[in-house]
Image 1 (cartoon, rainbow, N blue to C red):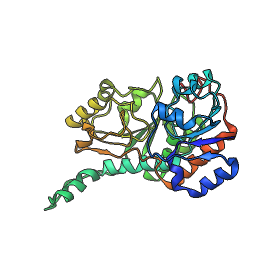
Image 2 (cartoon, rainbow, N blue to C red):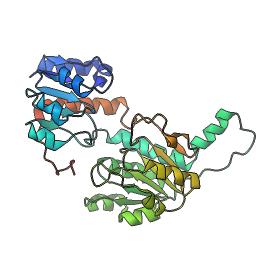
Image 3 (spheres, one colour):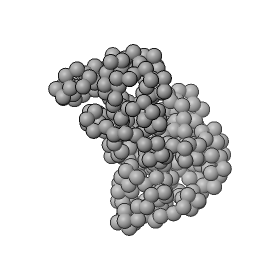
Length: 316
């Protein structure tokens, strides 16, 4: 099988390149370190039977132009850039594995909770400005707070496990029944309304799909507990970012830390200049451990790809 790789991350793992070449022999690796346009993707993949990809979009036009391509194997943690109906229409199998980066993302989310509650972004800015002349105010302890976890799948469950030593009350909301897990880790199952009303800290770990896109509107933010801390290491597009900016400005939302944005790169996003907002450039899975796991998953998918089903997890 001829395999074309679009993800540039194999350059950081030469041993995986060698493993992939040993498996398939005819493997092409990218020279570009960016997402390809439709025309570039068609030219790059023409004549290849399998593609190991990152966040490339396989539109109807791309798929129609690549009849030889039979497998699209994802290294990414999410699938919101893939339309399963298009792949199925053109007879292309796919591979995606859930939770491959769960440790890295969950560690970042808990880090951001502590970061925001302690107001580290603000205190660091005082030092950078040279304004440290005396007492600088207070942060707070995470211990004793109520932490809401919206989405308690692979990453959400890792967050719950990491929070066990912190002495927090944990609420969780998920449309899937995780009752056994909740009992084991002392989690209270609640509705969305309860989650929003009771959480001192709210961390979001939902997939981006039709049910979650634009979920966090201004009206939802207004139903949250005054002074809430928000953490989003999941996907952009779930929050009304302008509504969030306004509520950070008013203080209704005391602080927020986001790793993801509706439009990425997020250079120039007005949220980034808010003093109570901390931002990072979609680094949730940017550890060597996570990327090795994701690349290995993509390699595995060349042989184990399956037919995508619209409306079936994760496409819902």
